[in-house]
Image 1 (tube, helix red, strand yellow):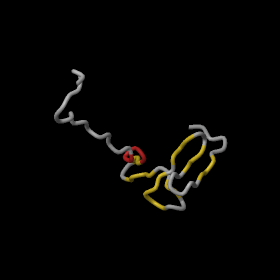
Image 2 (spheres, one colour):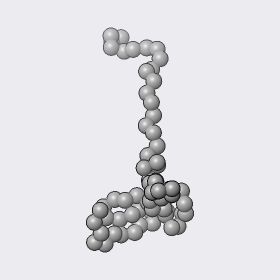
Image 3 (cartoon, helix red, strand yellow):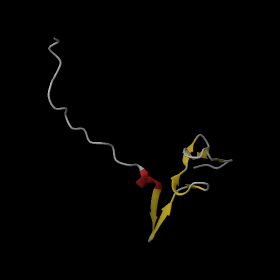
Length: 69
């Protein structure tokens, strides 16, 4: 039996927090949402990647044309 094998309880690791809070912005007294999917409705965000917005649930995509961020 190898010497480096440990038995017993595993060390507790914290789970990463949800990144959904980054999709909202506070402007004044209002809570502004980023981009929701028009097919799926509120609660399903569009991913911003490679010059397009993409929904992973229904595979909807919007292409960005000539816009700079």
